[in-house]
Length: 500
Image: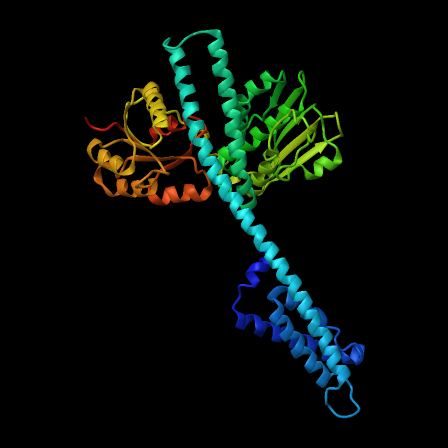
């Protein structure tokens, strides 16, 4: 889709081209006025020049505007204005020229201020995006550490090595629930800039929507039960295939379920249905909650839009979820629909996606989540945050008895990798001395780790960061602060343990 060039970018065009364009536009205005004399007569000779000068002054600045007005006005006074005493320009003519030139000066100044204001807004927006990226990095480090520690406590409880006190169990559950909420808020903050700049990453493949809906509802079942809500689901008997990103589509349905849980009072019902239409798949989430009025419905999919605008904000959230739903669905060439009979009468959200007829007979295991193989592996963690590295080490040892080593900087990590021949290297990007990208390139260049699984683990989670990680040689890019066992689930993507 074509986008208009910002005013500030137009001012960056070389001066010679701006002045040449100004003269050309003025000449075109004079020519058009001359061609329309048979229709309009010789009155109002400045009919087309004046708006042309305004456009030039706004787009290219004061100088080109003055040149356009002077050149155009002079040409009009000489060739288009009827004269009694020859072609000499009289005092009244100079007055009209002065009016046009003065207008160009004034409008040019207005255009300059508009460009300056736009540049200031763009700079502010750029700094905001940088702030969100840095904020996410700073928050993901402690979030990742805490969630890993919680996972270790849970596994320790299963093995009987942690206190079984009911109070301790409730505390762990509360911390885990609040950490999950905080992690989602961090992800939502990052998605703000992704929505606006169109940098939401989509990795398409055949997706069976029945299985995706079933898994996503199961993942959110505990949320519904905690809010005293009943959830029903109706799925077709035959598979429904679409071409899309299963992670993003699951996120879309999850956002709709979370939205329904927030705005449906205890004792309410949420109904999820999937229908196969001739050319599309329709996935709907219907509730009998608070409903929507017409004003809210029209702004519901804008970033930061909130149906709950009261001072106490009991339902929480940043107002990003539905905006993300719309952006992701449109990237899949689909659409989102929101309907409600009014306040207190519930609402229905539906996502409509094109069917993937080419892969309708694809194997169902193309979208199945593969569990990590219970096979001992040699893993090297390169991480300067000692607490995070220690928690990840314990988690990896508990999940599969893996052999884990830690290096606190890049050079030491590369040295250890050359001696250990690790199956997997988990490397932070923001390392001192030698950053993670340099480490990955060094690991890929040496025989010991040329075929190892490289996982980038970082607080930076934008699409550009993931692309840089891939170009450097990483196989996967995992953000900190999310699911602490995300690394565990990736361990099976390289076969076989290292030789002793």
